Length: 236
Ligand code: MG
Ligand code: MG
Image (cartoon, rainbow, N blue to C red; front, top):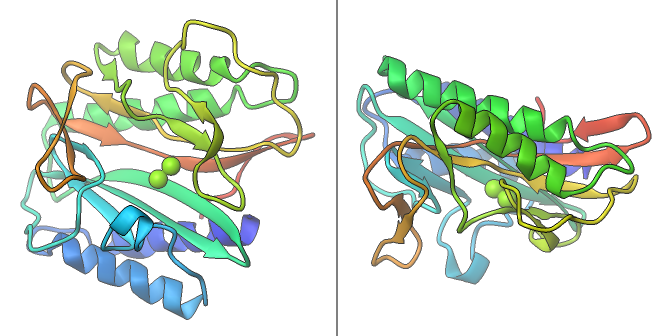
């Protein structure tokens, strides 16, 4: 899983490097495919329930699951990129939201807070702590900044499949979760909206947007619980 995580980190690095006004979301998918091919890794996104690409690209008010295509990034956009890799049967999964050129102070703050909420969740990933503390920490950071956390999509355990049980909500789920054990690996992935938490799925059957049209950001890492604390497997 460390090896799969490194490939995902490299996809992040290579796709971040090309993000600027004028490129298309399909260009981001191409950059991802090049890394997967060079590293001999397989994509866990391509053909997932029929998904046609190796990355999800979700601009502005799109929260997750956007399909790469001819959308041209514009100065001032934010773009969420979610991707993964399989190496020898083991999965990695991670996402980031990047500014396109110069963005508004509001957009910058949303990105900064969402990434900070992810790291607040990761800090809770030590042996013996309870799973729900991850989401509670994420929610605290996001809501303290006046934002809302998406409820309809959540993080997940990950291993020989991308999505394993249990789910990892980004909010207090209303009941205590199981205790964390060394060897657990989770994809923690806060989706934070500048406005309300409500979501709408578009008619393409994939793209999910904020119901109120507000901006949304998404940060994700694959993290292992080790006896030395949380180890982020998808860091560069
Ligand atoms: Mg992901
Ligand atoms: Mg995920």
